[in-house]
Length: 482
Image (cartoon, rainbow, N blue to C red; front, side, top):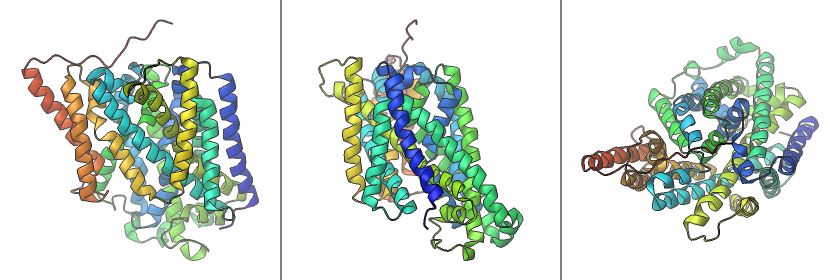
């Protein structure tokens, strides 16, 4: 599908706008390392909620969701994102506890409670996963640009996506990330909200579309309750131990904002679940009238909007898809660089204590180097699905109990956290191999690994509580008076 001139202008304007935001924020708002790493811990409700939402809504939740609705899942594809929305509700319990730690990273909190070994192992797992995710998201962004502008070679598109991500993340840090997330999610929400009713109207309305669909495509539980529940637990596990999620809660101006942002994010994501699902169903109903539509519906959203919506709306959707993937890339990149400087460097022998300026400089340098390497890897065509599945699991399954329950169980012992990290990680790897990265006995690898880490955590605690082993140090520090 040839992209229209108006759509191309919007996409290019978006990318230039993101770089300008990064530069301006870096010049005006970055006064110290706290500004660069956690946005000065002064972000309000809407900034945090939209940033959380932008990081949850990626390419798989837009074009991927439409493809699933076009395919065998039908309307039940909505659960692919709706389950993530529901997972934000229990996360609201942990959100104020995360903010209360006054930490920068997950390994920092794990280290406070369960020691240096636990912190170092968690940091290595997190950096490894974030590196994989950065590579996959830059690759996905480049692939989207290439699909929209096929005259540009794929490798050039990858370089373009990587350069834009590097520029505004490196200059603007967390503040630029959150400002861009707010804009990105706004583009996604507005673009899809405008395009969907236009497409439905041109297709004859919902009544005409539903009449053209097989009955099973209108079954809300077509994918099965086991899959729906599995997705819920999968999202909850990855959200609670996801550095890009935790870092957003750390930027909140207070604990109440963290709770409210979690609930507002749930509402925003629930709204976002609707539009791609409807577009995928509309594309299936109109498939005989849509030239260039892939047989598997992989381009269903773009083809149906490009056919029926005005060029400017197509441009909004195009920009939305690009920003959906880039919003994840920028967060993963900054979180990875932050952990390298905050946790890996001191944890593995770094002797020199860095001041504010040095922290910002070296974190920026890590952003550039890591992104360049990630861009190189993305050019080798590694499977994005395989890379994402491994990355999400390896960072969450082991540290799940140590971090999440470490915040909620004051009497937890040092060994309970340390041992649970190792058993959870091993369980994830074993389940990943047995299931080939899929589902085995209705359980995804990350959920199984997290479950094993929770069981280990409580078993070790019960044994050591009976033996009178003292509690590990607190995860919380008192906020200094301003």
